Image (cartoon, rainbow, N blue to C red; front, side):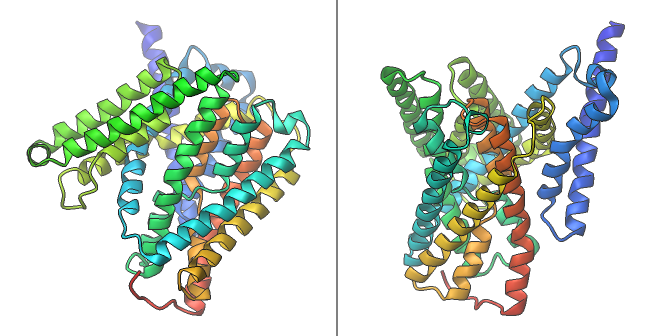
Length: 417
């Protein structure tokens, strides 16, 4: 009994320390004019390796021994699953934006050019040797690199716009709508990549996994239609706390089933969010999704802590600066150039296109989730993971200062999207 209490005490202390460090990172980032999540990510990823480096084997045994790391890992995945319910719901809400000409063209531009940059990145990495490239199947690797340079962090983007009082502008609506459409495509491609990587090259295995994913999509559509019915909406309004608990438990239960059947729990968590109707802040289901996501968001810093230990603690060798530089360059050119070209084709001015490019270049937590899924599926190596994390931090940190500079120097006209 005493050993159990000691184990629990150390585990809770590690959890409390992780959350405290995340809060410090958030405050520091905001003081520097950055989104709070940037500080959370940086300090979260570095805290674990730093503690192990300073404390040596004693700290390793105290923090990670006796299954405590496994407990923190489980907790981090639970938080991530709950958070992604909100991400999926936000994607659905953004994708429901009217398909106006600027929206379609901006989404196409910010998807096609970054996708091409991702394939170019995959080709470059392929010539750098196995330490960086790894041994993942070419299809899976190419798709992951395509997705990595394509996604936009919708939650972080929305937070930046709210903090800068820009949610009422046409650029805000276009960027959020475009990001939602792009990420829906990106998540689908990531599902194909993970399915092909985990099938050992078997065509039947790939088809089987794709069939399961297709069934998940159909079930998501069916459940979404049922939840939009008047009785379901009325029940959710009357029993909101129960609905929140049930949706959270459904997401966690599906995550457990996903692992049991060799699927990725991230995709099923997104499916739960996509199934919930996007009925606005005064609706029955949107507050449920937002509350579930907030609960998960509280535990997301644990995900950074565990990821940092898993990637950095074993030792990656020399920092792959060349890979990080190439990734940053291709990411910026692809996303900002693609958004600018798309916006111009959609009838927007060059300055509006620049603002859209700056906003859509935000990758944040969404990118880290993609990278973690690819890393767990052994599609990317630790060295490449590190290079892409650097790319994520640089492109996300750029958004706030560049956006402030652009809108202060020459405010963009507010007009309908």
